[in-house]
Length: 210
Image 1 (cartoon, rainbow, N blue to C red):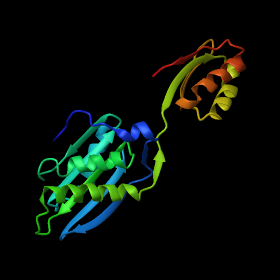
Image 2 (tube, helix red, strand yellow):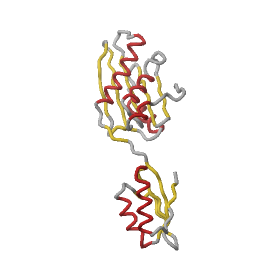
Image 3 (cartoon, rainbow, N blue to C red):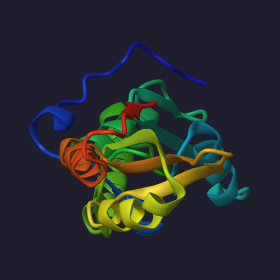
Image 4 (cartoon, rainbow, N blue to C red):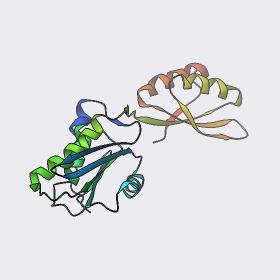
């Protein structure tokens, strides 16, 4: 199992990252070897490794894979020469602007050796084509806030904040009111704070909890 220092992630700097809308696959034949790329959205490393186990073919010559979840990543060559499979798959994930994605490229050997360069192109290219044609959804940075409000304010606060994409995470009812924890897009935090201040006439303090 290979893991190295953090690989630069240029897509993060220039344009929004995406994850997959749903799992996808792409099959190619290259010099009589079959290469099947299968990709899926994943939320954490445990889910990524579960995806690898689920889609790997027991009758294949190699099941090579990579995942990227923020700055957490891993890749594996599964017996191919070092650097010819897992790393090109990871680079395909990054090059297509994806995050929170795992990709497995399965190879059934067809009798013709491809060489190191040919292998890297085959694994990376099959993964890239699989992702290029996949449905994607933008990743939105989320923030958690919590606040204390009166019982009579709760419904109105939730309704007004839901207009900004906020969803309740937890509500704790006490003798004197409600502690409400919300999750909402980071881009709406300032406006949410202003709405809360307006509705409570400045009485409710908002705390950022992440």
